[in-house]
Length: 372
Image (cartoon, rainbow, N blue to C red; front, side, top):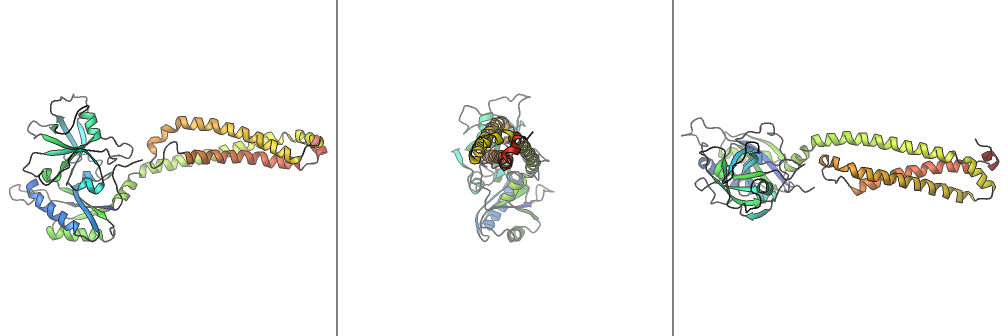
């Protein structure tokens, strides 16, 4: 499964700007007032030891982060919108996932640009608002047309129009189960943001980074808290926790079923072979070699086991798609898993043939002939 972004060697640290008490005098009342802080924070973040790239975004821009999933506020994380020239019906979804990020965000996470351009320094608070959208948004809301240059806006009559300037590839930033979630990205310098995520890429010292970032943030503004440092790899892993638990339960039942299947196969085949003790005695009495009899029994048992494994394989392939949404990093039709289980059951069947057959071959032919 392809994530669509690269979490390796990326750390995220959070901070939060104060909400203004007086919009006329507060330092962070508007995006224009917040922009100098963003630029200075980025400059200082890039200067940290072993940091190769840095970017900023709101907390909704942290891929697969579960900390704010239950809040789902329109102000951050979601966007209620209308598209220019198209009336969205009341029964049609008009809410998409959204994030506000700085221009460096896409390169840092290695999300590829497919068409148009990404944000740059000209996209400031004085310029018309712009957005970057993913393939899923274009396919859902701007189908069969060039999305670059199209406009949308918040579902308020006085909201400014936002122009699409870039199209990026889908990424599993909202859910590992689905890459095609419509999403828009706005420029942080144009929208501003209070809950911030500082993205750092490089060969970082995970223990030292939180303190280093705290020092740099509070050297710009001592009021600001710094918290929630995390490796993006760990965030991806944490998003799998519920699914991992479900798979552990499924695996437990599967192992139990495998054990019962093995015991059942062994019991049935060993019984069938032991019932042939009389036949084995007759063959030995007539001069058949013991090795030939053993090969015959094993061959017949192998044919039966392969037939059963083949039927089971077909059944497993039919129902495997039901497990697809629970899996990550392995396909529902993983050939190694199928081959391993099939070989295990065939091995159990051969063992079930071999042991009773070997026992019967060691019996004196006269005793075998009297076997009931």
